[in-house]
Image 1 (cartoon, rainbow, N blue to C red):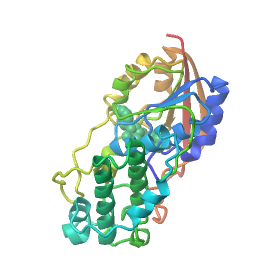
Image 2: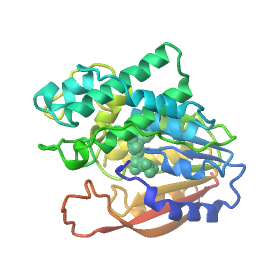
Image 3: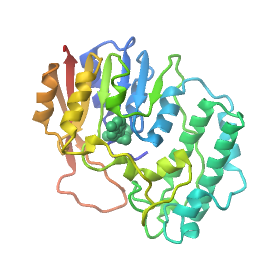
Image 4: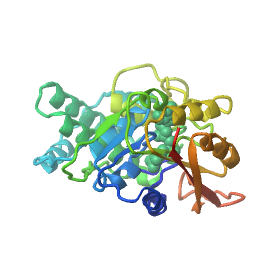
Length: 334
Ligand SMILES: C[S@@+](CC[C@H](N)C(=O)[O-])C[C@H]1O[C@@H](n2cnc3c(N)ncnc32)[C@H](O)[C@@H]1O
């Protein structure tokens, strides 16, 4: 998924830096407390003892329940995918009625056909679960597959803050459910959907990786439609974009972020803390250094990074295309 702040391209840098600080990780508990798409946890899943993954957003919970917590093979996985791909279309579901032009008369996040197909598959997955025809592992595997596949054919510039007036080429393609495959692994892992500052008081481990939002863009607003598909409960969508109520993160607020961040690291019962942040974030490098240094031995890794682009087809020009990506390190002693 093309996700704001995704660390997919930075994984080699992150892995190398983290391993150079921590050394052997085989017996370590690794927590990805702002997990988003889960790519960082996935990169460590097979090399550590256990992953704890968390994010406040429901779509992220679904992705991580599949990619991180699922670790035993699902024998009939392709059969379920095939069945979902071949159902007769349900004509009047929530996504079609509210987020497709044919149903809503205004919003156009998906083509009419794809909106109906999302509804059809989402309703069936819930039915299977309610009838105990599938367990939680299969449920999250299928929901994750649906979120990933729907995101590929969304008629947006990759975030859901707005839809496009005309159906773009990739959104004209028919939605085909693809399996969201996860790594098979002997160890067990745990996924949460909580505020990081609340969860931190309930967990402990060895490595805490923190990748909070850098700026004021709220993830709940930018990815609202993924939450709507994940939750699939009726509500009255608001305004032109069909927004739902969303939780506002203190990490997106200039007034709150510093105290929120300090409370997080103060409460952390982890030895090694890593913070990803870039040079355009709300907190400045020196402010972060000042806060972290209070709690132990501080270090910093830096790399250059290509800026997030909402849509590759769009000819946007930025004053600078590269940003600096920092990995702040704290070996906690207090
Ligand atoms: C920069 S993104 C993480 C990207 C992720 N590392 C990846 O590669 O996909 C920041 C994440 O923090 C989550 N978030 C924001 N505020 C939060 C909070 N208070 N507690 C937990 N998660 C939060 C957002 O939903 C978002 O997914």
